[in-house]
Image 1 (cartoon, rainbow, N blue to C red):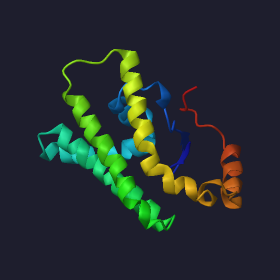
Image 2: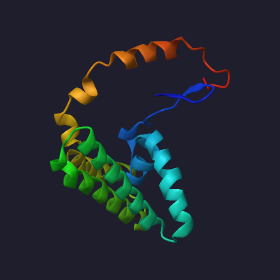
Image 3: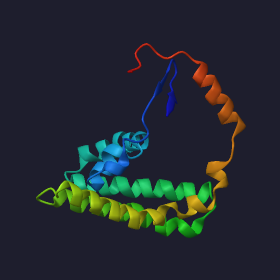
Image 4: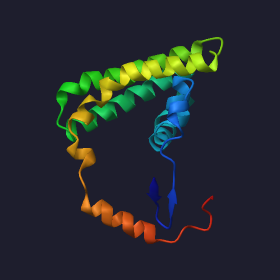
Length: 164
């Protein structure tokens, strides 16, 4: 994903092979939607963590706020109030599952951890993506302005500090 700042642009990975996650905490914290994850971590998790002693409570609050942001998108962009409860439930349940995972004394064997992680995601994901999948025009429409901007950004020279 391209990110433009005041004086340069850079490429940032959006995902880090989320399919290979062996735990929900790894999925949400290290592999899926890294840019938004970093924003939530820096703007919600870290400040709350300095005031609260329970990292699990802070993580659950972060999931709740992320769920509220997704509800906002579903209502404002997609005009779908009916999916608000299921969207919130998806993030709340994933937050609870991450908290439970944090309290487990032993790590699961990798294949079992992978299987449980993806079963939880397969069960909870339809709760959130239903309204987004129903209104495909928002996500699959061709946007002439974005297309033009993409061509302009590709014409810019790569920064010298950009890793190869």
